Amino acid sequence: MKILVTGICGFTGSTLAMSLLERIHDLSICGIDNLMRPGSEVNRAALKRLGIDVIHGDTRNLSDFEKVPRVDWVVDAAANPSVLAGVNGSGTSRQLFEHNVAGAVNVLEYCKVKRAGFILLSTSRVYSISALAGLPLRVEDGAFRLDCSKVLPRGISAAGINADFPTEPPISLYGSTKLSAEALALEYGFAFEFPVWIDRCGVMAGAGQFGTPDQGIFSYWINAHLRRRPMRYIGFKGTGHQVRDAMHPRDLASLLHAQISTSRKEGTRKYTVGGGPANAMSLKQLTAWCDSRFGIHQPEPDPLPRNYDVPWIVMDSTCVANDFGWRCDNNLSAILDEIACHAEQHPEWLEVTGL
Image: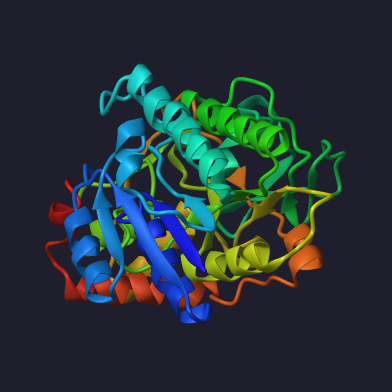
């Protein structure tokens, strides 16, 4: 079997490639990456040492696919992954569209021609900001918790958010590009008869992630705390009560393996997947974890809200557990410890990743 991973030199793409090599017998992997993200060269070197062919190319350029060999499956991990993309000065809104929509269309055109299956790594940020902001929450142990004694909207339970949760705007420019890519993927798969899977992923986290304040938050927070960088609890009255769940890409690799291996042609093609309630933590709780490991370093409260901030996102993986026998094996404690060990061993990591 041959697999192409787009965005292969990013944290998620590179970890998936390495994990799939370990899982699938007689697998050949190649990847394409434009290497624009600081730190990408570190991952390219590691991938090449494993015999993975890394093509320097850009999914936004259709001609760059002329260098890509025929494969059986494409895992699309190439995107601008920041929820603030297009509005915070790190890139324009047009560039965001070109990365996340036009690039996805080029990958889908490749799949159409080569008859390859397609897996889109989507995001928890396709969900309605208004609906997320309106969730019934209470504060418990320094974190927002879903109040299941209240009436909940569709698509949510104590297990988290599932694919039926509302996606009405506003969802952010970033979220809208990923939602558009989802729709296009399903339409291409139906029109040209190749298999498509869509995985709406929670927060990816693990050692070697290129953490920044607006994405890769677990890695950024641990590295910044260790280095005594200025840190802020933004919005929500500056409390740090906002919650996310974490999942290691190694666990996502086991799901991709199951999806690639199935012969099922009908039924659900779109799933939510993440660490779930057991792997969920607030920024305040993460700070306490860092304090216990590195010594006390207190973030500053910044109560001013931002347009795209939401108080609580935890992904419900019940459907992937039922349909593929999937489970999240890397618990939150192990993920945080892995990130911390990497941070201690790489004092230059924030600079390597452009901060």
